[in-house]
Length: 99
Image (cartoon, rainbow, N blue to C red):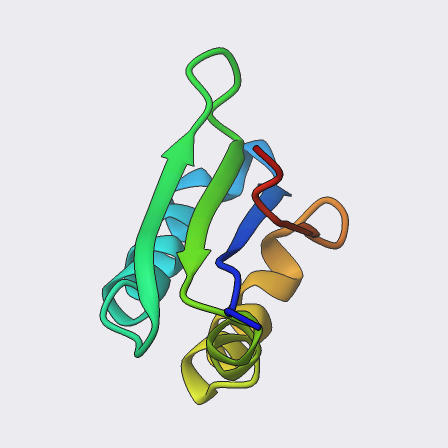
């Protein structure tokens, strides 16, 4: 059985006064995430209509690579730094290619 890519979409929203701090954390996360083993794509997007909203788009070689990323020290550090900046917990969804 072949391994299937894992697509991850994360949505985060910060307080209006924390946008710059949030962007800094996301920049550091991107610097590590896009170099991680098994990563094919790692993009951090900021909503044009509401700059307090960030979306991370990731593609991982397989579930193991996605799991390793989520359990990494750099993700733990990012989540700790993001905690006080977020309006609500991040929404993290995994998707598989169907077509």
